[in-house]
Amino acid sequence: MKGAGSAPTYEIVDLRDRTAVAKRDLKSLKHTEMVVLSDDAFSNETVKRELRESSALLCLKSDKPAAEVLKKSVSPSQPLLIAIPNDFVGVRNLYWSSLDALSAQPIVDQMKRIRADLAPLDKRATYFSDSRPDRPYRDQFLDAFRAEKYRVITVVCHNDGGKIKFPDGTTVDLSEITAIAGKNGVLPIVLSCNTLDHIGPNYDGLVSTRALDFEDIASGLLEADRFFKEGSCRYVGDYLYAIDTGIKTGSESQRRLGIAIKSVGGGVAAICPIVMFQSRSEPTSTPNK
Image (cartoon, rainbow, N blue to C red; front, side, top):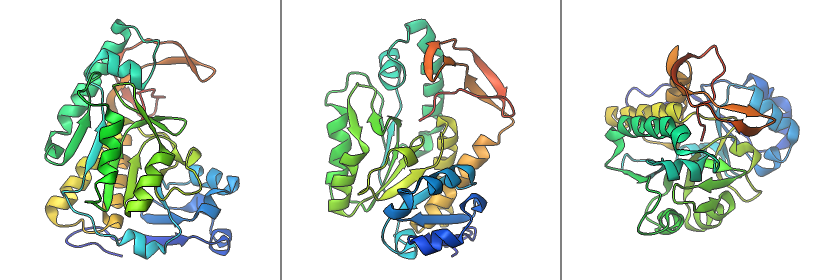
């Protein structure tokens, strides 16, 4: 399939039944392949493992034919909901409740830099940034899915075990998005870490197979914006290809801003914020989504 304008060609891979999955080596999936799998496929732990080992950073979960889902129309005016903290309290609410103000400041500064980079998207983006908004972000967020105005909504957020977190301390479970989005015919494009591990049986939408760095997501959104401006982005497939391409480009940058976090046994034991440029060949622990 080829999108309008100068959109690159990508292959639609429909893996909604067991036979199709069995015939395909998922570990060999490529960046240029837009993959759609069913709930049955996602319930298979072997499938999940092979997806994590593949180059397929993003894929779609749906029981509808792949071509139908990927050819759903998109527009540059579709909503973009971004949870990005702008103060110390917001960082604590999103990432680590034990952070002190001194440790959190480099992360706050980093979030502000990313927010500035996203300025070209301001006309269509809604930012959930304040730790004390006039109205709970949870309510504002779910209202966007209830509006029945758009068919595709993109979300950038941090999740903890499948629970989306906002700077004001409120949360929304991925299953809540499913309930509203499915009823209103909305396709949720949730850009967050490892949602592969947290989606429920009724979830239809974007699935990530690994951790996503905030800087890389920003690169993906800006690449999609470029596609829109060039007239190269008309369908969901074009949109996801652009985001995936931007994320891939960002993640391969030789030097980028990072924050070193020391952790032990999966939990944060000591937090040592060090603003520095890191080589991508070195481990990075920049706060993920």
